[in-house]
Length: 184
Image (cartoon, rainbow, N blue to C red):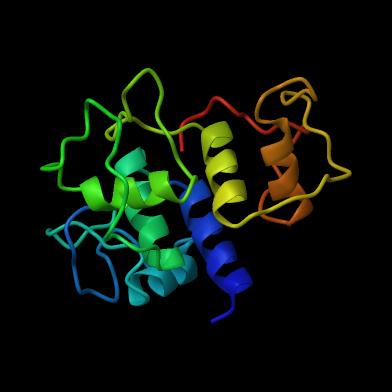
């Protein structure tokens, strides 16, 4: 599978609020019908082991996504190594944390970081933060003809949102807005 295919599937899934929990081997989740707008993407990513559902057979496609879940998805999607990694500098991610290896892998790869000595693994991500993560994970560059009214050139997320738009990963919302502070 090409990197572009992996990137597009991953980006579509994460930007549209997919979440992870315990592994379920189901090809169809109880709450994701064949008519669901993201059924193909969800099934593709589940089939590749990049995402999984909850032990009750649901997927919860509208649930917020936490940083730790994005870390796990990126490790799977990019085949990031989870051994021989530099220790994490975060007070809130001890080596006993269930997602320690995944968080360390994305931190070591320079894809996701924390601030003020914390990673905030259970914290939800905004659309702007996810734009940065996807752009960094897949080394996306470019500037789009689309200029979002709520993402000025002076905004920290501008280059990342532009990279997603230039690579046809996002088109934003009607009215020319991106909603950078909305949760994923």
